[in-house]
Length: 259
Image 1 (tube, one colour):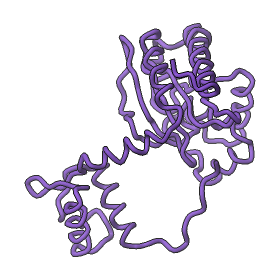
Image 2 (cartoon, helix red, strand yellow; image 1 turned 90 degrees about the horizontal axis):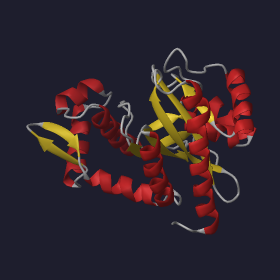
Image 3 (cartoon, one colour; image 1 turned 135 degrees about the vertical axis):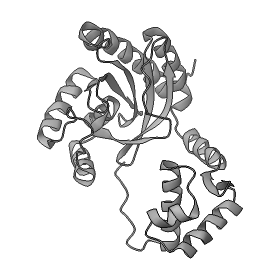
Image 4 (cartoon, one colour; image 1 turned 135 degrees about the horizontal axis):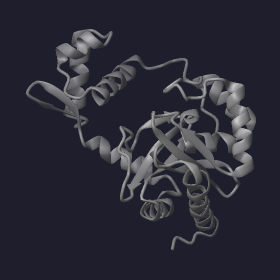
């Protein structure tokens, strides 16, 4: 599904609340004075928003510092529960992590982005800053590139036109034609690689989850340190395990068998 058009009549007060919530997500424990310095919003306006959000249990205050409330977790879980493939895929992700010993991520496509839904760790995972709920640009990730590859090319190009090709590491693809050449290769083999493109020293392989009409709605990736996840393990063994897992998920999606 394409990104919906942006409203040309934004509600300023709502945008102010969103900016405050975003700031507190990225920088927890801010005071009113710190938020006033960091946001281009009047102090009195920020104060009113903070009190309203606190009164509605979206924020809590401790020693004069504001934090996001766990009430937001309830909203996030409710949003995740609407993902039709989540329960089936989560069980397969757990099994895949146990089989490979690596970190396995389940993601969903939402608009122009990949959203981390769930992770499972094997016996020797590489710990990174990635977290459940995080949104990332599709071109940076193995599963994200796999999603882009199975979208209609016009839709993929629209996403890239809107979001650009942000460079995260020196290996991130920032040339659109180079990206679309790689997407053609991904469609031929059925999976994508991330070779240090999102985190230096991390390699990953990803494949798309598609709905009954064949549209990519999510994906799964297996990742690990480049000094271990390389050669035949990266190019053959992990892709084989990943594609077998994806096939099982697709069977469950098609026939509603969640065993």
